[in-house]
Length: 330
Image (cartoon, rainbow, N blue to C red; front, side, top):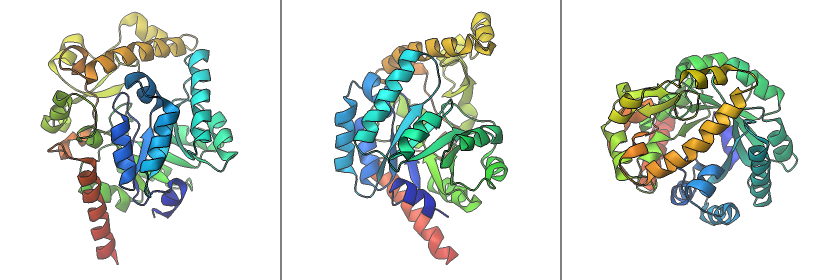
């Protein structure tokens, strides 16, 4: 069931380290591709959160890759022309550096598909329900990242099995995203029929992820009931750990912001403003304790994470579980 995904990405294990702002640092990405999995570059994180040159970073990841694959995250939300032009330039750099696997989100992926397909690339798109999947397929995407209600970041509403059932007839590879915190969750997702699994929170709690140790410990200590949705980071629901700070400031946008987010003319501007504000706040918080460090994004997969580990050990455990499952199936 995983063959098409492995062919599309060049990976040797059907596992993705998803794009995370601000957690997708270069050391983490390099460690993932060295183990044969897919690591998705988040350009906002590379350039703004970590101050790295995008082209040089992509060249470094290619050197590290030994069967793993580099992916590239394109948020295609039309928040502003400046942002769109910047994303187009980043996509061009990625293509020039040989990246051929792209994951798009939050908008119409058609222009990314056209650029990628022109050089033999592949595009998967984040979806939370069937109507968005159908629109993405109309735009020409090759696969779907199926974001369920247990995901970190911008979570969906459906359970993993429910989402698979609603999309399984579409004829493209489906990747489970959300709620996978241990090897058993991984093999369970593949047993449902998903061709691969995308992890985020599990890789934040790794040695190579460049966030404050308090953030990692909060993931280890949290249970799934500690995850709440807040609209105060980006204007749309984002999964975070419910800290004292989150309780204090609340999880809903103010009345004016809420109205603007619903308005067809103003919603893109409002989301752009939230995104710009969150770049500063989340960057500030990832490196030290206190203040906006209390916005700790995480999914309900925290329930399966009991320690901080090196990336190599995390992926080795998942690979071993996959191999054991394949042996028992044969």
